[in-house]
Length: 203
Image (cartoon, rainbow, N blue to C red; front, side, top):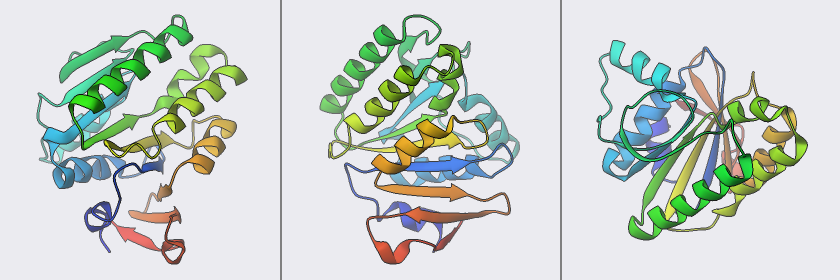
């Protein structure tokens, strides 16, 4: 099965963890999500300009992402996209996470059916000195919207860079875990349909 076809089987309210490396073809998964679900439904949560190398790679491959795609910006300098909220994760993390949560709640109420793509939240952890309380808060935030049928969320996490405790908390909480292999396949590591686990998807 191709990844595009697999996306259509994911139900509203689910949270999907996509684990990748720096060399994997995860930009193609990002693009497939937008093309399959419709860019008009996508909300990008961009941590420290993580979207820029993805957009650059796609552009050089001849693929374009609409420049008016809604974006929540957590740090970084890029002004790409239609900015809905801008926060500084270097400052008080409690205030940042609180504003972020409230903005998502408001957006989901006004835009049911939103497909949220969160890019590399693990990059915030070193900014807080790998503080365990912050890791728990960040993981709890990821779990807070599980089951909320107004949205579906895809989390992209670089497992070469992430703090293992954070990754384990996400893997435990999320409904699906996909691992992007460098050779170009996607392994289904966790699924609500047990027969899918261990299967590979084509990009």
